[in-house]
Image (cartoon, rainbow, N blue to C red):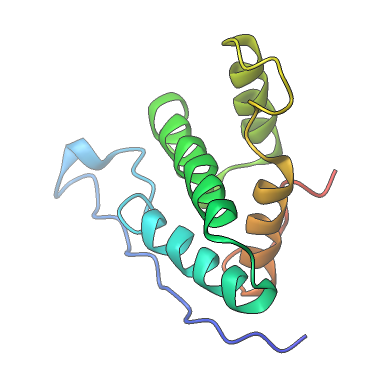
Length: 128
């Protein structure tokens, strides 16, 4: 499959000697929103989905990113399979028990496939 995507280089974290506050720093933290936007642009061009779908996907991916930053000190770009399972479980337990209120698993799966296909990740945490 031919995919044109701009590869983003995650900034290298500063050494802990230079800035002790950056210990545990996720190098994608400040650009994950840009990666989400690039995914949405790619997905819209490739599949011609509606603006409502794009809005819902953005909401779901931003929610995952924020949850990852708060509870895992990582971003959605660096999430592992267990992180995603725990995010979905937390949303389910928080009262989003209706399937229509849960974040879109298909959106999350498509996002990680995009990252894998684009070379941003070496694995797909949603594969299983």
